[in-house]
Image (cartoon, rainbow over all chains, first blue to last red; front, side, top):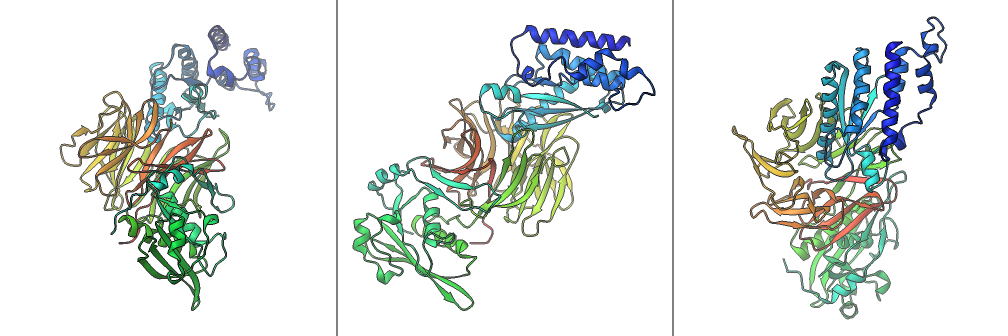
Length: 178
Length: 440
């Protein structure tokens, strides 16, 4: 349970970091911090009871996954594929999970806002996905655990043609295989 | 060919026109309607009189289709029906004085009549001032084929009066998207150039993009994410038969047919780096064209098939480059006006490139003369993209935004006018104009 403890601390501190900065687009889409998944992940009792295979019992891996999935989107500045500092811990949490569970897989889905030409935006979305991929690799995740896809501007998270919508659409989603 | 007469009197009339023309669409399809968004300067006044032998206002109202086509071209200002004082259906019935008073320069009349098992459509084009007959033809048709016959009449009238073949009988392909993120539905649609007769040729829960016509106008290449990653497909429209021509690891994007129809240029990625390749369809022979660490994409063939134009941000911002398909494969930058130029599309005569350009803060459609590199901006909105030339080169269709949704629009290649073909439901985007399908 040591790792669970470390993870829990990491997640809590992530939450504090998130709360201390001005409103970011991802906070509006993230589930509340006291959601059921997070609570069971921090408690841990249900998952350790081997043999008690109830429908709600989560394995440690499932608990860890539920925890990191609360923050599974990295947002980008306009025409940039650099990971902003506030998302470095988000990527690090996913890296830790993937290193801890080498059979786990993640799919990095790169997106852009709607401005500019469509196929060029496929390129920009791919560049963002590759930036996150390189960050995961640098933290010890195996290449075989990662796939990337770029949707460019084709799959917006939100509708709208204002800066608020654009900011929520410039992103990489870290999608874990269940 | 006779030159277009100068008609200053038409300007005021045309500038006042703000009518929306509701077009019909198959149920379940996005409805497209043609709006006049900018006063048409120097549009020629013409009267297209309701044809005899058919009811006015029906879906196959020939005169309505002809008038709409001519209006869509931006070069003609058809007379409103309510202003017509007579309904001649043949040249002999025309009282030219009536049309002179109505300030029409030309008049089109005609009638539909039974012809064996089918129909025949007679039509005539007359010069109002001189009374001269400029065209008189009898076209075989059927009840179902009346719209197609009407487009053909518009083609002939347009060519007789401008010297440019009409493109009203061709079609457009585009992508329509319904639903809100993330539950969106994507459809690839082929419709007549006026937006009528939309037909869904592919439907998917995953994105569809970048339709590209084969040079013979019989096939579409496009990108589909239906297998959760991008792949390029080629679909024969007559049969619906399709094949997946590229599903390599990473990106498969931006297909463009070679002028001989044997190859497509496409964008592939290795470790996230996008480069241009050519793929010979019959043999699946893949040839790498660019190898730069930048984004290289959106290839378009030169008219002679010896080089490719493409978008690259190798110099920092997206610009258009040209690369010869020889051993050296040296890429040369061709756009120097504005900080963003992308998605080049060749004019049918090979002399101009339509592209997306960042002009005074807005993404707009520009046309660049290849020889002089002079860039002319055609549009004035904020998010115009995906230009595609009409097969006669006279117009460009492109995607724009209207009320927060995607819409299609036309601009004349000389920048004189823009018109919108907007959708009542969902987003429409990514238009591609079909080439002429038969020798003319």
